[in-house]
Every structure is written in structure tokens, then in C-alpha cells.
Amino acid sequence: MDWPDTEDGRYARVYLEPMMLDGTQSFMSNVETTLLLARIDDLVIPLTVNDTEYDNAYVCSPYTHYVSYAKQELTMLQKPVLEKGLSVLLSLIGWGMKQSQINKVVHVNNWLLSTNLYPAMSGEQAECLLTAVQERYPEHVIVFRSLCPGLHPDLTVRLTEVGCRLIPSRQIYLYHAHDPNFGNSKSRWLLKRDYELLGKHGYEFVSELDMTDADIPRIVELYKLLYLEKYSYHNPQFTERFIAAALASGTLRLYGLRKEGCLDAVMGYFCRNGIMTTPLFGYDTAVPQSVGLYRMLSACLIGQARENGHLLHESAGAAQFKRNRGAVADFEYSAVYDRHLSWGRRWCWLLLDRLLNRIGVPLMRRMKL
Image (cartoon, rainbow, N blue to C red; front, side, top):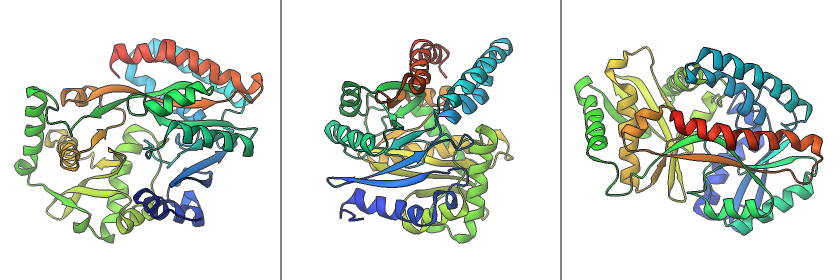
């Protein structure tokens, strides 16, 4: 690989090359995929190729995303009768999706994280990648995950023009922390109160410079307690090697909350093209909720976004909490290209398109999920 000598090129090399050499499961135990690289101009774009792998993390498995993970999130509706009916419906749809080989897919710009940030890619470059992938993998659906029309207008417009469906994946929350007028008086008061909890409870906000290899198992544990045990094991399951690589190479900027020598909360973020996101976030869920570890860590994260001058992509979940602190809701989509395939392969994507755009999105907006 002729790695471009650019900031994005250097980042891609330190992040992707070890996975190319040793396999993705060394870094994320539930991510089984073929990882490839595409270079277009000065951009290095990771591609993942899958065929079945129905137990994969949702970052590589549409089945996991739209069926397995969706079933777990039905409890958010707090309507038992509706939850049961939708669970049965998802099981039926899931059976049909397996028959139509929904996981026979190539994901473009897949960094194997909950949110794939995009480099400064033009719509023309995205179309060129789409054409090249279709030629090499004529039996696969081609998917660009993590697209938000408000953040990626050129990409979404161009990919739609060449025949991609925009299929909703989740409602996300964006903090325009780089804007001096970010939030309102209430959100600013809440963030100030959240941040003051550090002093109240004796926590120190520490960076990776204050972390050592001895902290690695604890970081994995804290992520597991929140993202896996509280939310879902369908999220990427980071290994100690992933954390060690992040600490050594800086592919994630790691920060945490430490008290009396014990690390009780951790976050890891990265930035690209003016946007910042945190695929690593966790805290000790055994600490009483009244202490406010989540509130403290979130306040520190927003502070980092403000200092860096970045828009903060805060992913999904904790909707009301984020809204109260100035986040703006938006929707994230997958651009799906399946026009080259038979109707037997395409019907499930058409169904997702109709169900999610006509029913799912209005429901999520109304319930503010």
C-alpha cells in the first residue's frame, strides 16, 4: 500500500495496518470480516466484505443492526403489547432477510466503530468508489454507513442520484459546541453543574498521559459495563489489544475520571474533517447514580469539543439527557446500492426503506428516542 503522507493517510495507516496484518478479531472480538483498503486520490478508505456472519457486531452486519439490535431496543417503547407484536414481526422479517442474504454486503468507509466519520470526500469520489466496488463484488450489496444529510450533503445527494436508497439507521445527537452561542441558559447551567460534580466528589479528569498499561484491563471493563452489559453485546467488543494500540498510537484520544488512584470512567474520541465522536465511553455502573459519573464524563467531553473547535457527534441514546444539554437531534442513514442484484436480493432493502422512512422515523421523532 502506498500510504499518502497526509494527516488522514497517517491516521489510516496506524489504525488499519495492524488489523490488516492480524485480523479484526484481535481488536474487536465480535467483528469477523475481510478488511480491504481502497485508495482514491489522497484518501485511504477501509472496506469490509461479509457474506453471512449473522452473529457479528452491527458495524458489519445489517441483520444484527435491523433485527437483533432492534429487538433489544423495543423495551424503550415501554408498551409491552406493542413490544411483543413488533418482536414477532422482526423475527419474521429476520427470517426473510436471511433468505435474501442481507449480510452479503460490502461496507465502504467502515472503520468498525459505532460512528464512521468521513474524510473530506467528494460526491464524485464516492461514486467512483461505488463503481469500483460493484465491479469487484457484483454479487454484494454496497453500503455507505453513518451518513447524515446535514453533515454530508454532497455525499448523500450524489449517492442518491446514482441509485442508492437512504435507509435510516438511528436518531443521533449533535452538539455544536464549537459555536460560541451553543445551547441556552438552561443547558449551560446544567453543564456547569455537571462539571462541578468532579470537585464535589473528588474526581480528577486525566488524559492518556496519566494512563499506563496497567489501566488497560480497567478501560475494557468500564466500556463493557456500559456499552455491552447495559446497552447491547451487539456493539463492538473491544479487546485489550485495541485499547493498547489506541494508547500507543493515539488513534483515540483517551481521557478518564480517576479518584484515589482508581479509574472509574473513561472516554476515547477521534476527530476528522471538523467532526468529533466517541466510540469508547464507559463508567463503573456500580457507583451510585447520584454521584453522576455519566454527567461528569459528558460535561468533560463537551468541554473537549469546545476546546478543539469541533462539532460533537454524540451518537444515539440518552435522548432527553442530551437534548437538555443543548444537543440537536438528526437522523443517520445508510446509503444502500442494490440495483445490480435480483429482486430476490433486493426486496428486504426495499422493505426497510418503506418501513423505516414511513413509520420508524416518524415514530422516533414523536417519541424523541
